Image (cartoon, rainbow, N blue to C red):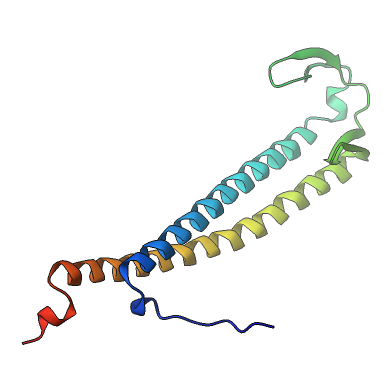
Length: 154
């Protein structure tokens, strides 16, 4: 097994600091995009949860618009108010009761919330690291433009 080495970023030169900063920026962009995708998925599951509540005995035989695509709908009548078909992923669908479907979507929302909270903490730590690194990089650039670290000595 290889041992990890720790390097003090203050010991790095400007080119190395710039490279580390670029890597941190890339990681931060990736994590931020992942966070946005998690939030979109969470919103989708919340919408599903809300839609399950519309399947109720009072709406039996009412006409609804059934989406075939994002922009194509056909009229349909609600005949079974006790069961729904749930997309459980990778092309599989399962018939569930309304209560089971509600629990399924509520569990998905909670799971995503937990993951997004963890991811948000990671993003915050990366931002703090980025700010620290940027401060050191700016300090090194100022020292170099002022004639190096020895220029401050008498």
